Figure 1 (cartoon, rainbow over the protein chains, first blue to last red):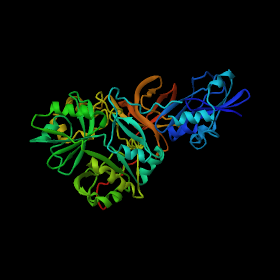
Figure 2: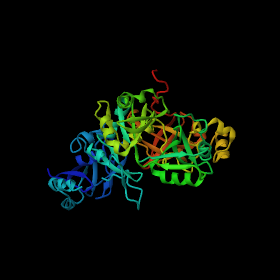
Figure 3: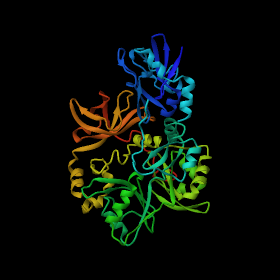
Length: 123
Length: 378
């Protein structure tokens, strides 16, 4: 299943017409200890680059953006109880939400793992 | 994802580096702009650093703060024209928390004043030190000498094991009690230390020559109980301790009574009624101020941060001035201003965060008990 990355440090796993979205290991490292995650409601209509979720570290609240257009099918309820999952397993159990894909062609503008690593190394 | 915290607000001024800049980076410090300087916000992580200080000892670099000294005839009386504390009655080797007030009693800065025998040492906030220096120069008599000591850095060693660690280097440390200060010598350098700090824990602040900072910091951090601690944990520690942060919880629009800092208005000064804004402040202390700084315990896990509006039902009643997750409390906490009829501990208020109402309860501060050492050997 292909995984894409944004310049705002979200990852998106695509499986047919459905995708899973989270923030990258680099992002959680930058944020530090995560104490709260606000995931979007099921049914929420997201547009590429628009606000999708909020992640709160000890120090700051940060916006998480939708990597592509789509409709939320599920938020990760586990993060309500255990927001630190985003620190311990950001690109696995710490996923934020699942969504349908409104326009698959938008994936073409995103980075693959190799390109994202180069992007992070340059920061 | 964006991270908007600690962006530089000193537009137009080049961000300065602290004497220990390279040391912080070598220790893994993540550097951010704060008060015009590159400063470490964290090393291993705010949560771990915060909890380390509550159990062990943490070393903070606070060299961005202004270290000033005033000397001259009748210097105490001169200083008393600008602050509400009893400075003339401050004995040598003693220090006091005080407030620089404008003519209306608004708070220009909070500061520590130490009677060093031959002069008064003053430590002011880094973000407003140049404004403070200007205010002091403008308002003190010409025969008072103001020295801004930029050749010295300032370190804070905070936590229950701070005394054991520091006494290995500077034995005099163990004989001081809270808010006492002394001069000492370390490795041939003239240093000054005080048993004080801004975390709510026992601890010390140590002023020493810039060229000695790195060796001293290394000597402390070589000890098992000492780790370097960043600004992030400094902020969460002082918030739990109920201590206000200038520029956030204290501003020129706020007077000491509103800020719940009545203890900084000394008894003799209240009787003499001769400090800036005395009429307003004494009126507020006697009759209650219209609004007051309070602590807030936050229900749930959603942090309530600076700027969040406070409500009683549909009525907007106040604002949060500091807030965040409190590692030792294990929940979000905040401080802010509410009308005096809402300032009683136990009062329910609601904070607005991203359009949602979060239930909060007014709480007595500190949120975590202070652990100051007021007697040696006790």
